[in-house]
Length: 367
Ligand SMILES: Cc1ncc(COP(=O)(O)O)c(C=O)c1O
Image (cartoon, rainbow, N blue to C red):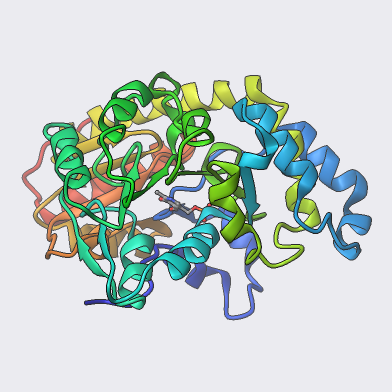
């Protein structure tokens, strides 16, 4: 059992002990986390800069009520079915530390986003899991639903394996859940795949179904920390009272509300992300990687010398995720690369090609 923090983010090391080297953010490529590569919409930055002195020195609405209303409108659900929070990680901690203990059983995708396993382990819960690969993922979920768990976690699309399901397919499977099983659906990257839809409106009317959405990846607000949990208002009540006051900062609330008005801007960025990812996937295969998944804003790849590739890339300011700690089993040879801007992705491609050529000098160069 591991209780080690499961995150990427080695790129912080480049920023200095007191973050004195923030300027380096424009030199390095932080592709070891899946934050959006694009900036927030210009009107979001304007809203922040117009009022920043006030936003910085003033306490925000206590429970982010205006943001709950904006999220409700955006997701077409009642605002009472929305619990805003400072990032979905924070909501995971809030809920799972209340729901889990050593008597509870949890099912979590494995490999998968490490926070769930981390908190479940901290609480002493019994954790099971299966891989969610595109082939066979849904039958793993069906088995989990029949498994009499206290909590089943689904990440749609699943980071890092790339499995995804449409909202209607999931509703069909999840409708067979036992009333004793809570379901958590994490839609952190769903905005990049609008074709799969969202379970948020369904969760708002059900018992025991919780959907988390974050603006970190979809609206480029990871630094401001804004997310929400969606569930039936009665289900949220017992969590709501434990959410500390002023949890979502004033800049976070204002930026989020404005960002939700800018769907055209963000939709274009998602389409660009997919195009960049597809080109990069083709390139990675040509230079010798095996691509295991290419979804949303990441690529999961295999190479026998993945560890050396990650280390060498880091020495060039390119941070790539070794996803070993996203799996309960040893997972050698894998790496996960975030899709970045066209220019950064090209820089990553050139560096990776060079690294592979140094590691295996006979490999043909691809232009
Ligand atoms: C599946 C998944 N859920 C949630 C998060 C955390 O997002 P937030 O910034 O809202 O805490 C991540 C971050 O990598 C993630 O991959």
